[in-house]
Structures are given as C-alpha cells and as structure tokens.
Amino acid sequence: MPAEPPARRRSTYRAPSSGDAPIEVDTAHPAGDVTDDATRVDAVQVDAAELERRAERRARHRAERVRNRRPSSGAPRRFMALGCASAILSVSAFGAVAAASADDESRLAATSVSDADTSAASAAASRDVISAPVSIAKRPAVTSGLSTAAAPFTGGTQVTVAGEQLDQVAQVAVGGVAAPIVAATPEQLTFQVPAVADTALGAVAVAFTDAAGAPIAVAAPGTATVAGAAAPASLAAQLTEIDEAAVHAPTTSLTLTYTSNPAIDAQLGYVLTYWSSYNTAQYTVLSGVDCANFTSQSLVARGWAMDAGWYYDRATGAMSPSWASSTAMRDWLYTRPDLATPLDDSQRGLVKVGDIAQFDWDGSGDRDHTAIVTRVERTANGTAVWVGGHTKDADYWNVDEALASSGGSVTYFSVK
Image (cartoon, rainbow, N blue to C red; front, side, top):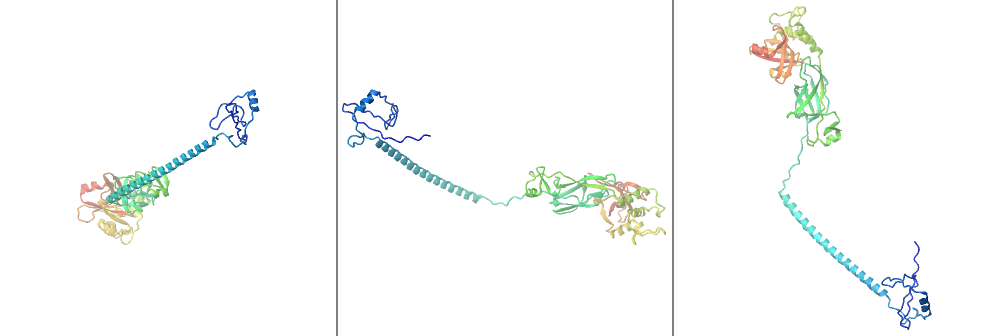
C-alpha cells in the first residue's frame, strides 16, 4: 500500500481590495479535490486566465500574524470531540451505575430466593421421614457343573452344585422327575438322583426352581447374562442387586447321564431269570416261605458278602435266620446302616430298583413277605413300585395292587 503524502499546510489568501470574494485553493490537492474543514465540496474549475490574474495579486501569507488568519475550524472540531467524549463517559458511567444497580437487585433477589428455598427445605425436612435404603434380594443362581455327571438309573446317587442363594431352591428335577434335596446352604446344594426305569438310560436335563415355580439361573463359571447376553463376571458382581427385570438369567441347563449299574444289573438279572424257575442247583428251596431266601440270593448276585450274621452254607444247606426270615432280615438290616437305609411308604419317592420291599399283611408288626424292587415309575400322580420274588412268584407285582388285595402295609430298605 503506497505511503500517504506528507500533510501540507493550506495557504489562505486574503480578499483583494477590489472586493472579490476570497477563493481558497488547496495546493496539496489537485483540482476537483478542494475541501474545507467541515465538508467536502466539488472542485472549482479555474481557467488559465483566472490563474494568471490571481498570480498578479500580491498575496499575504501566514507569516503575517496580524489579521491574516481565518478562524480555524479546529476549535469546533475539538469542542465536538470533547463533547462526544464527555457524552461517552457519561453514558459509560450511567451504564456502570445501572449495571451495579442491576447486580445489586439480582443479588437481593437471589438472596430472597435462597432464603425462601432454605425455609421451604427446612419445612419439608421437618415433615420427612428417613427410611432405610431398599435392598433388593439376590436371585438364586447355579454357577458350577454337577459334581457327578453320570449316575445309575436305579438312583440314590448324591450330586452337589455350587452357586448363590441356593437355600432358596425349592425343587430339583432330573429328566422331569423330582429329586429329593438332601442339604442346601446359600453356597451349595446337594440332591439325590431319583430312580428311573431301566429303559430310560442316557442324558437328561437337570432343572432348578424356586418356591414360586420360577426357573433358577444356571450359568457357566465366570460368566453371567445381562438382558440375555453374556457379560464378564466382574460386571455380574455389580449387577447382583439389580431387579430381576433388568438382569435375565441364562437358559443354560445341566445334564446328567443315566447309566446302568453292573451290580444292580446282576441282581435284577438274577431275579428275572429265577423268579419262576428256581435255582435249585445252588440254593435250597424253602417251600411256601422262600421269599427271604430268594431275596438273599439276589443280594449275593449283587455282590454282598456273607458274614456271621447273614449266611448260607451250600454244603450243608444251613442258613442264618436273617437269610431266610423276613422279620429276622429286617432286624439284621437295622444293625447294618452301611448296607441299607430303612424307608416307610411315605418315602416311596426314594425307592429304587434293587431295593428290598417288606409287607406286613396283618398289621402285627412282623414282616410277612419280602421281595426285590424290579421297577419304579414316577409320575405327576406319585411313584409306582413293582416287585419280583418267590412264594408270590412274580417279576413285576405292583405294590399298590398287592396292598389292595391283601391289606396291610409296606416298608423298604434302600440298598447302598
């Protein structure tokens, strides 16, 4: 950008004696650029003759101090500038005062509101009742696998799982069949595998429900589910007290495999082989009262070892009372909890294939008949038991039908 030319002082000419009006010519500007201090005017076109006429005049310059200077327009400008400055300062001062006043009013209003809020809060606090924080109960969950993955179809095996709030588990079902709960703490639960038919071998689901019948979560160790998706265990720990609606349990299920039991298979095989064709090659037959004798033979096939309290001498045919008498067998088994556990008919749900059933036909308290459990079925209507044996020669004799036809009662020994 070109530098501005240096300011030049304007020469002022005095009016000639002829009375011609003074004409101002600004030598610092070209023709057409003449201005005074207040307004800009159109340039005065001066022809050459006029310029020559003016040149002949004797001009008086600023060097002559007396009556040679026109009143300067700088004073009005300074006056106007001072006036503007004063006005600006006045407005600024007024604005500052007004702002200060507004601030004071705002502070006063805020103080009033704060006082009102404090008063309202104090009044509300006097009416408030402090209550203990609400604690949402944790939902039970199984977080481990089964302690035993397989069990004989005859049932009786105890299985343990670990988890949280497991004392809230109301029922365990194995393959849809209720399994008795043996023990339960918040961290661990033990149940007994129910017996099933020997045709129900293979894997079945194990399910847990609470008192309301709602399924209980089964999760793999180290994981949990939030709204149906897997999440780290650390996140699950943070969500344990959130309502069940926000955290949904996974639908993973545990499975147990029913297998055959070689010992029970051998016992049952013996019963089904000799219930109608007696094994006279190995054992003596007690005509009309052979039920306990035949039951003892099946227990030997199962693997039981004879001892001084329970035996049969093949060479002589001698046998202990506990071997041949139903009542004596009962009394001996009472002394051998390592071999069997007594059950009454109200505990029929614990009965399994290979157990011993004893009948008291006349209600005398003695045992009148002994048989071997050959089949167990559990349905919604309860547990049905079938037995096989001698005297009443049978492979599958329904216990309820036997009681209906002969009267009396039935008890059991759960064989270990």
